[in-house]
Length: 176
Image (cartoon, rainbow, N blue to C red; front, top):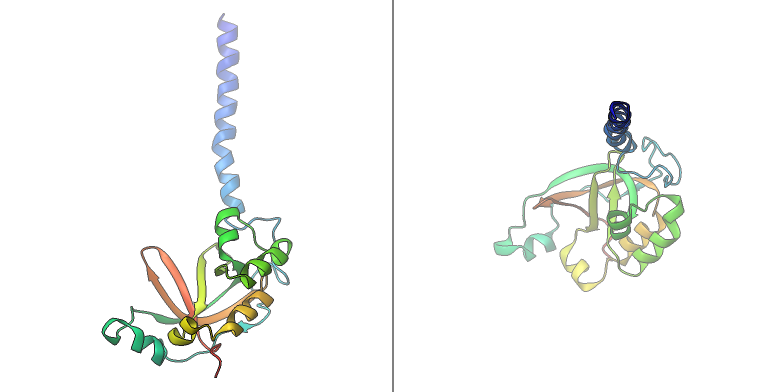
């Protein structure tokens, strides 16, 4: 009986040690799936290109559309990350070259566009110019995002956040 108890205690001790190590190993992998690497440099140190232009924090159409012509606070930012299809990344963890064709199809069919950084921070990307966005005259942005799905890019725009959501509003894609 004592030998059985000792054996059970030993097995339980080993199980506890392995259970304590498991979260550390999972955490080390991080939010990016190791099997789902971006096209090009997987270190995120050499972006394949840029998206967005520097300008005013908010365009004239966004200011005019704001409540009392005062949009929420925002600040110009430049962030390096992989262009992802937001919903597949958030729901399924899918990104990278293996998900590129699916992500492109989703983006081309209206699904949200995202940017995920090397540390796993996720931003929604959208056109900054309010009226052209509302009127559907910023299709060049969606086209550019689809073309760069799974690419690590340097994205410049206006960062806005509210209630835990983060978005980068990208300028320069409104048709003139």
